[in-house]
Amino acid sequence: MPTPVPNGEAEDATRFSLSALGTGWKLPKHQAHAIVTLRDTNITSMVDTLSLFTSLLAAVTETSEAVGVYWGDAGATHDPKFFLETAEDHDIASRIMLWTGVSVAHAKDGRLSLLSMGMKQLNLPDLLLIAPKSKGNAALATFFDFLSYSAEFGKPLPEGDTIGRTADERLPIHYVPSPLDPKVKVWRVELK
Image (cartoon, rainbow, N blue to C red; front, side, top):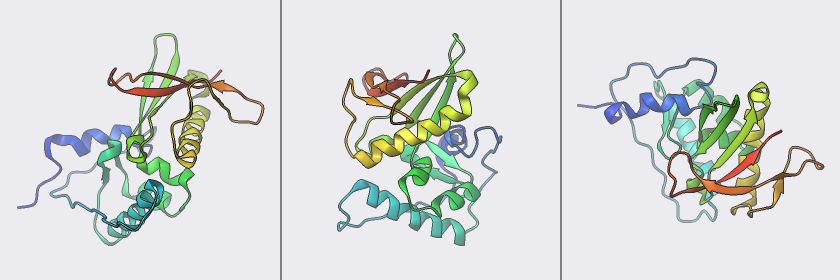
């Protein structure tokens, strides 16, 4: 008999999908899950592999009665409509929103912390972006822009280098322990 993803893992992972932020989307009750895999030894980069897999998963989602798309390595369960609309764009900037989950935390000082989940799929560290609460929506867009840049760069951005939203902005990059696992390093950027 088919079973859903065990231990409520897929249901819990909706909170890390961009499709659930601000929408309240929850994974509907379901009876089973399908596992989709891709094995292709001819692809040279992880970005290309994930992109091909995204297209395959979009085809399966579109032709099935999927009620959610659980991306295990991102720890995120996406609304199928969001997944399909986002997967239509083949650029990294769109697909990074499917490949990573985002954990949002509110600090006592009123700032937001956005932590990516899943960049290990690209052999890259996750991003911890700190931003003023008043810039929440802009911070979220910047967060995914920075993740896209990191994925296109293809290797960890160096400690002490800078990144910015404009040619003139220079936000320093520092490596710090992850708030989820102090043994893992993430790159931290603070927005002003």
